[in-house]
Length: 144
Image: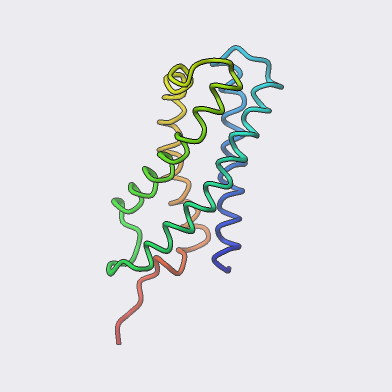
């Protein structure tokens, strides 16, 4: 699978599972009608989808320059922190506007989802790598 195809497939699958979880949870947490939270989940997902592709492109370029190959737990942890950190910066203002609340309130209300997505990003990427194999940037090559 080409690197671009892999990134697109990974991002789409990640977001499909995320929407299936987030929409009903947002409806319950914010006591909003499901139609509103499904709309918000799709908006958040669309932003996350674009960020997923951009972040993984940057991460894999960085990873390809590292002397140690493979995806250790530390590298997966760095991936999860980088991805989720960037996402928080983008999504909190959107949630605050959509839900008509302050950025601080949106951030505080989002903490549970942030924890979920932090773990989800690491576990999803691990599972995706197990099913589809590691990208070329992480493959260990034997030295001749």
